[in-house]
Length: 505
Image (cartoon, rainbow, N blue to C red; front, side):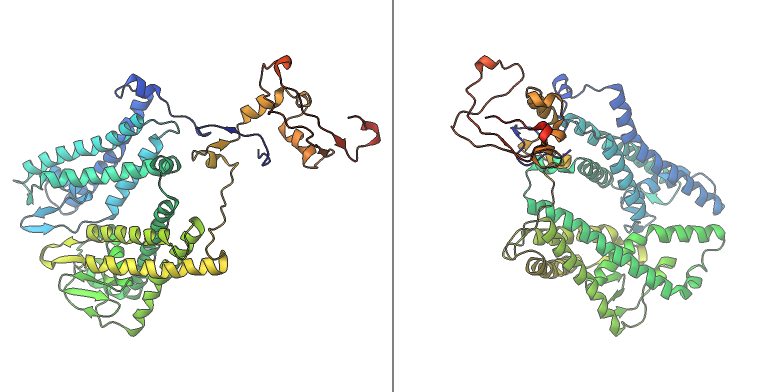
């Protein structure tokens, strides 16, 4: 229900969002209801259980297909758990730091989804603390067990025990990121209000997320197109598979490493280069060298760089322009103060650099695989900031007036608007209490009452203030004898039907 602009509003320090429950804080942090305990158990155990079951199936399938005994099953499962969380491993004397990103991304997504489901609209700080603690407790416990198993299995399989501190840091950091992201997506409006972030920071956060997603989507499309163009090389990569189980294993391995290659391709799109040991490739040059025999890497170019590859630089430029247009729509950025645009470009470049660092690493005899991170960060920021400013300028000159903020599309009568902590709001309960004491309100609801004033069904009433008096306080239970004098007003009823005409002053 929407009310007119002159509806009497009550000033209050709270919003219409459900108020946080203070009983949990008053009774203590350790007070938990059985229902909340069940939810926290799911937050702690469901992602870890899913990961362990997946690793058990994969480890048993790999050992059985290879005809090996099951003596090293526990060590393989422990190594798989650590590898899924990007913990650096050393097999024999070969370092394995380049680990697939797809399983890690799925685990982080599952953990964040569980945390978002556990958040309630009236969750307190204690509730959020319990959720974060549960999200960390389950995986860290499994990590401790896997570290102990890997220590015992080092005598059976060629697996060196990983660094304990690095293992806990990787697992704890990933699930902390998942918990914070899940909570933020569930109560992001309240979170932005509580943090008192400026509007250009909030707009920059949203713009950075969109820019990173667009870069990854375009890079994935380029990888798939290149894979189809070089699909004739697949026969060579599958020669070492041996049997059907080997073919399935190589295919799953390629899918697991697809996000890694997409991140490397982002570096190629912005004008940097991706390195595979002594080999490298970019839009300007390609240096040949040995690369792993993985079907997905058939998409990596091996010949000289073609002249038309420079056209790929249009992709980051277009993404930068779109980012500037997004910031123009969602912020008050001006041409002389493009703070949201610069924030979006900086955050997107930082996020892309972190992804580039995680997606690369040492790969045994092949050497280092990854991007030149300092150059990649600077080039990415330039591609997003400069075309982003062009997009902002275009929006201000041709879409919005120069120097004026964009149109605010927020409906002040929308529930989401009141959830953001606005001082003025329209309370339906207050509305009903206000009009219960007015004579004609007994037969009409709020909408019918305003129909007359806005000319939907009834006549218009015109009032003339003759004398200035204090405002009339109309509240439930206020007696008429205590009410102040009513001001003189002349009521003119225009265009009334003959049957309902009443004259008087």
